[in-house]
Length: 365
Image 1 (cartoon, rainbow, N blue to C red):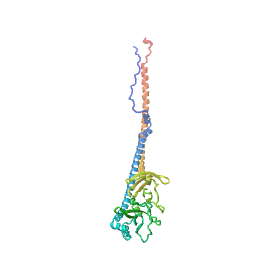
Image 2: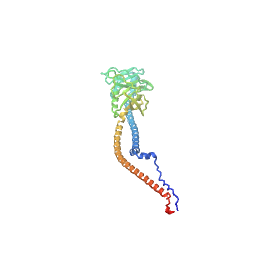
Image 3: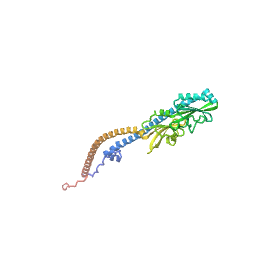
Image 4: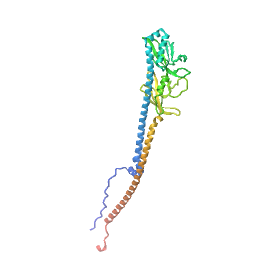
């Protein structure tokens, strides 16, 4: 009996892949696959680490600048405050106040000589009446020096400014000094003023011991913006006005703050710490060029970069070997897939032939 033709069996659906088509295409290219899998993530991590560590390095270097500026501010405050305390101790003695009241120049000169002798940084001391007329002038080198030069253009006013602005000791020497003043009082009555001429060379020697490595420096400006101390040689003459410099123009406090600016020819980026010496209105600036500040970090980063390149070379060699094996594997898989398709086609053709009806032979009739 003739059998009805049967349809070929439906192919059994295989498991569906969960990878997107672009990933499979990338997987078939070993070099691109390794770059995507290792190169790009490694480069992103290295860039992120560089940026984060550079920012951390900048923060730490800024803190170091602040420490240096605060230390210099403390030295200045303590040195000038000590001078003023000695001066006030003299001005507060009843015998000294009585000599002021009597205008006893000999007694005043003897007391002021003691102040000059016990404080080496003091060059001269003058005693003036409330109208500003000079009563007595005592010099540390009375025989060798001429008359005392005119004091600062901005002298203290009733003790409100105990330290004057910077001015020249004399035109011949070009040495910078400041006036440290104290009031002589009898109760509420002001009898006069004692002003000591403080030589800033002594203060500069203390500040020179503060080093800012590798290429930074520290300087001091008074409340009017004139240089009090500066580590580099300047032309002789009156003190230099630096009130237009960015760190000096910045509002500062005793705690201090950081500022980034550009300076020089050509302009270079700098980082500076600015600390105010609040009792006197002075400013201490510790600054360093960014290139020098980041140089140790960048040298370290280049060292690690060399190690990473060496590691990348090793991984590249291993990856190249893997890529060749992977390519051979993919070629073998492709050949097997081609043979499998040919086998399936032959099986399908054989099935179709068996399902076709056989023609009847004459002897079967």
